[in-house]
Length: 432
Image 1 (cartoon, rainbow, N blue to C red):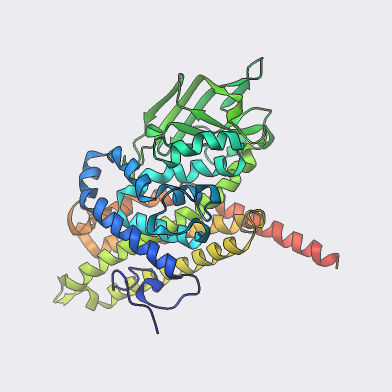
Image 2: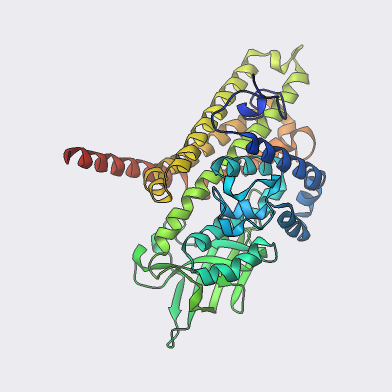
């Protein structure tokens, strides 16, 4: 017997397990989380989305409300919530010990559906993991209570104007003072999401010589010499994309994340979850768009027929649906493998796969956004009304394609990683 359907009944508007079809991945706690996040977003976000988009900002008080609702802990944690965070509230009353990668997937699926609120958390998603996985316990004990309570915010500052995806060649420097107690930071970072309202900047800096070996990760508090200014981007202002300048910023040496020279590896490990998280967002964006396009096609008449009665329109929906479900299946497979593998093996075996998954999510987004816009016609170009979510999604597509590594760079990475794993397997076979 199947579970009851949840949400929209239109084709491909929801993941198949929402419709009551069986799945090996989801259990009662995932359904409870889904229901709780959707209810919270429908009450606290949906009524205000258009107003916030028009204003170009989300009220600052909402972040503290998100903390009270139990959203910040799972967002900062990703696929597993550490036991020491169990005393914080978790939305849906999910026990910290039960939280897994599929809870993370469901959480983001529903937050993206909820609208603009997802923009608040990008800095936390990418800025908190290096602190959690690599920082000293004393630094964690100082910073996490501030950011998990919603009192302060964090972001990740890696990308620079001149190097983009070429992280090995970043130029922002952090030089130790003669007494060894502080670093003095100079340089620039660009396209830093959530930077305008962040209190801490998890920053990749150069503490040594050229190349990857000279890069370290440093947590930089907003302080004298750190300046931020907004960057206007195609997806709009809600994510607070920022240009950051460091001019002789003095940072305690104890704010170094791990050891000097480990920053490049820490950045690459962090990218794996960021790329998976981009796929989560892309999937729900596609489902929102196809839902709205279906609603329109079922009632819009042209040439004496409803759009859905036109074979060419059904062809568009069929091609979109098969790509969305294929992307869902691949994403679930990667989430499952990350659950089974250790963190070390997951990073080693799935780094290239996750890069290619992120590429595929961007390609599917581009296709779905364009096809839905065509179905909507002029409404798909309009920022209000029935086509507004498709118009917004169409503009947001570059946000799924560029951040986390551009398509060309990630495809090359995926092939190189696949070949590396293949050669390692061959060597292992030869030793048998």
